[in-house]
Length: 472
Image (cartoon, rainbow, N blue to C red; front, side, top):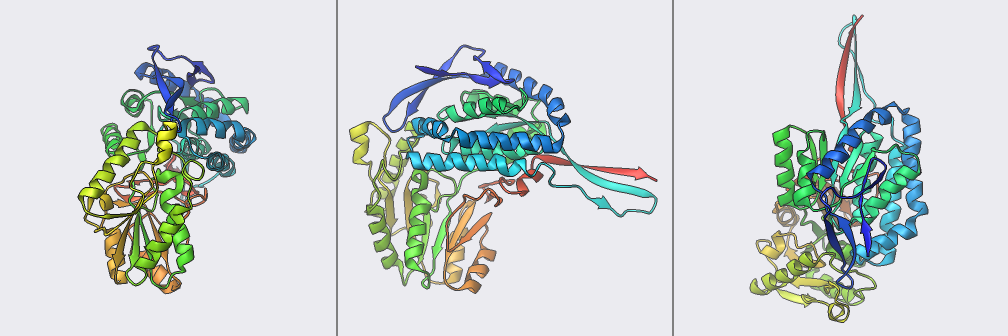
């Protein structure tokens, strides 16, 4: 059986405790490899390596550092087939989907490799006899903790801007999907990034993840995952008085007005809740539809779902635990008396293969107060909620503990902008549903987290401001 070790200081590093964890292929339910089970000693070693590397990394001129980061992006693209196969082996998602995610991962490093000199500081006009300016400096060692749903993409989204800002990284990926993160660090070494700049410690969140967040040598933590774990990470950061970027959950509202292009809106709604089998925090899992077109939208959406072939167009739920969790929500929906227009079942493919496959599900007769309308299911499940007025739509959309993404479908530009202004979310998409662009800042309001990833904005979160005053 293949064994994955940590990658620390530019080399393979076996676990201090000698323990390993099994990794399951969710398409078959079979174990495909084992990974090192890291502990606080492994984290100590990795943070020490990252701390030593900060000096060498900071001495590399900005443009040269940018070229190395860009080279890492090109290496990802050059090895896209290998990386995509690794992702498929641990996530079960269709190869074309995995390949697209690897491509996006490459773009992160290419994008931020070109931004190593940004954001720039300011010169402040304080007094004639003073020269006052600000500059941005790296924090040092960044602890990155990523989830299992989009492994390399999530790692790249945090690591690329962190490196561009001059920091070094210790990454703890999910124990369920670690292979591409290890390969990322290997590629970083191959393109000439100094050892210790990118380190990978494998293992579970309880041991390795907590130790990383608590380590006194870590100057900032970037965490993507569930709200409960995010609260725990934020609590640790608060005790240590260090900054943290939290990208947490969502129950995003996708609003279809009566004047919308229904063909486009239904296609967007389908992609919003079935993409990655619904296992993205930005999934559009609350579909708010004007009562005038409610029935027509539901009919079209059910027809669109029927064209999806589970296993070919949509992969499995990635972990056994999450597979069970989605099934529990089917019971919740039944107890709340809603109607499954389609789905609400485990796919027959699950029986045939042993994989964790769920049929895409559309529920109607839903009230926004119900659990299935309020709690993040993290599966290919959408609830359809009717509304009557623009005010109703905004009120229902904002009646949520989350505030990550919203969608607005209408031909009326004035309505689109007015509703977008009122929605309490980090992003609003009008007549589209896409979060793929590296250039657009991404992050949420309320329990969806704080801080921003992606775009130039992310660089602000990986550097701290210093103000210098010179008496002339």
